[in-house]
Amino acid sequence: MCGIVGYIGRRDVAPLLLEGLQRLEYRGYDSAGIAITGRSGELRTVKAKGRVRDLEARVPKRFAGTTGIAHTRWATHGAPSDANAHPHLDADSAVAVVHNGIIDNASELRARLSAEGTAFTSETDTEVLAHLIARSQADTLEQRVSEALRSVEGTYGLAVLHRDFPDRIVVARNGSPVVLGIGEKEMFVASDVAALVAHTRQVVTLADGEMATLKADDFRTYTTEGSRTTATPTTVEWEAESYDMGGHDTYMHKEIAEQAEAVDRVLRGRIDDKFATVHLGGLNLDPREARGVRRIKILGCGTSYHAGQIGAQLIEELARIPADAEPASEFRYRNPVVDPDTLYVAVSQSGETYDVLAAVQELKRKGARVLGVVNVVGSAIAREADGGTYVHAGPEVCVVSTKCFTNTVVAFALLALHLGRIRDLSVADGRRIIEGLRRLPGQIDEILKAEPEIKRLALHFADAKSMLFIGRVRGYPVAREASLKLKEVSYIHAEAYPASELKHGPLALVEPAMPTVAIVPDDDLLEKNRAALEEIKARSGRILAVAHQEQEKADHTIIVPKNEDELDPILMGIPLQLFAYHTALALGRDIDKPRNLAKSVTVE
Ligand code: AGP
Image (cartoon, rainbow, N blue to C red; front, side, top):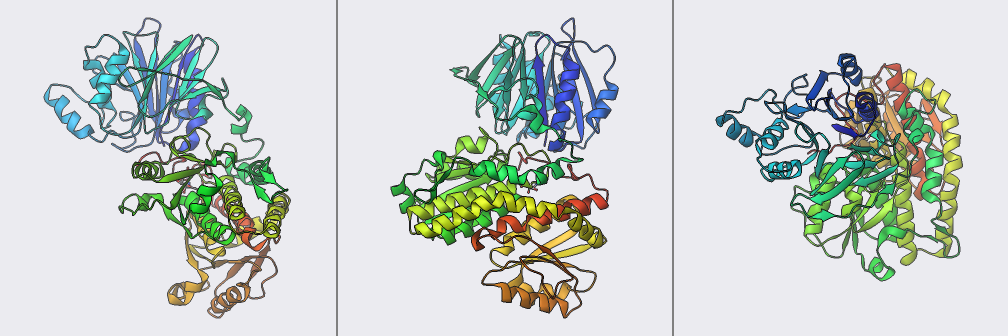
């Protein structure tokens, strides 16, 4: 979604802002813009529909300044256009605002301001903020921004420049991330550390309801009501290089390729061989509380929801606690019964997905205990949860999630093992699972070696208009995630069904033009899965199986190494990530930034 970058210091600001915007391109956007405080204090802006390179081409040669803000916009109110791109200015060009989020009462505010004579130049909700700040008569810019924000309902991460206060940038957060980057005689602000980590790894993440003033050698944070807050900078875990492509042609390929390393990281330092369990320091759940949990409800969206579905099965299998997963976006709108003996788990790579965050906030309001399973350290969901665990996948830049899915499922395996060993999982079973977890990185590398063959298969199926994905019990969420991967990145329609449901409808779709991808693990359901393959073959369906051994009824089988039954789903989806990748490549898709999608969905 939208991205913000800002800088105040001594360096030439335009190239810094353009570089920051490029680092945010992965989030998805349709236009970009930049505003700087010029040499004589005047505000100058350049905006362009399209890519950051289109904006760069428009930046005049003489565009000098050392303070500025910039933005990549993902249209919500008003079509992608130069006029709707941020920054937005008031009528006198005294105030420039960049904004992520949505102002819910924008139409009402627009009507009021228009009736009072304000002329609008864009269709955006953001422009009202520029006019409201400009109209304020308060003494300081901080007071003017906070006065404007009092009229506003909705979510925002924003940064403001003012012609009359050229020594500062004022920023504010409510529901949309704002991170300050603390440098040596220079300060940065961004909606995502990716935009500033090349310059500083010292960051302060603002909380909702917090504002900050950045000056070249100083920053301070405070509430929207003006009370000072304490902000201690923390060090970003990742080097700037972790955000680069590292010799791969796309981030998706890089991120698929680094999964063995990522899984190794989520396991590191957590295994306790003596008690055949794992330590998850941040759970904030003592053994007595863990024993008291009667049910676990996992909430996430998209890929994280699928990881949660596998997580629920792992928890039921290893800890024998009834568990299920539900899209957070559905859960929050159905007035759910919140039960005090249920443990809620919010899953999110970004930790900023609005639907997940809103579900967490609703649960907390009703007194529920919520854990987070999150990748981005210090993100909103991680902060809002009562405890949880990080999945340590490292920065995931491609819009399409791959390594985070795998690491999230491994994190759930750790949680399930931890809960299981507090409850009734035997030492022997605990050891069995630990040994299985330790085998994962090597097995992932083995799967990745089959890339040339998987590429060949992708080319073979790339002409399909639609594909069916099937799996049973442990294989079903794998099928769902694999079908999501294919549709997101290749735009081929793909539908996932439990193999057990074939006869109840989807079998009608089977014909040579509708290939099926089947997840066929060597577990107690192997014969049942084989029966489904027979049914498809009998109707001349083409089959690609992902299995632990060659499947006679399949036209092609991708063989993956066998692990413990419970852990097999972690491995079985990986070849299908490569399958989706190579299909998209063959079709010439924009792999890292599929159309219409954004990396973190911070609006409803
Ligand atoms: C993954 O490939 C998708 N782009 C999407 O489904 C994503 O998983 C979903 O939006 C949730 O994001 P989160 O994990 O950051 O909360």
